[in-house]
Image 1 (cartoon, helix red, strand yellow):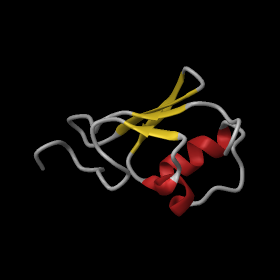
Image 2 (cartoon, helix red, strand yellow; image 1 turned 135 degrees about the vertical axis):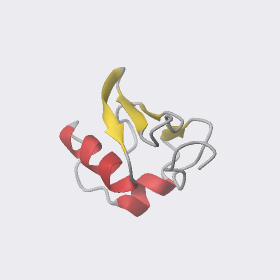
Image 3 (cartoon, one colour; image 1 turned 180 degrees about the horizontal axis):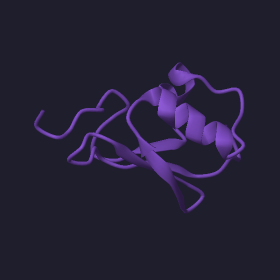
Image 4 (cartoon, helix red, strand yellow; image 1 turned 180 degrees about the vertical axis):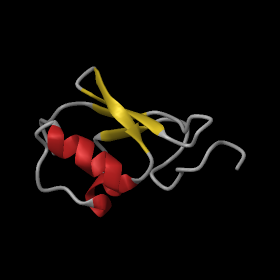
Length: 74
């Protein structure tokens, strides 16, 4: 993903979803790594899978890593 768009995954919301921002644009609310993969595919970042997304140093995971998908405190 070198030279690709900046990706930020925000902390889980009260409903458990996490906002995904790519190149300054919010693409939607992800509820799993599969959702993040799909948002990135739609943004033109093809060929990634869930393991790529979880391990990528180019994705900024805010306040919680790629394994946090439930509502806070749940």
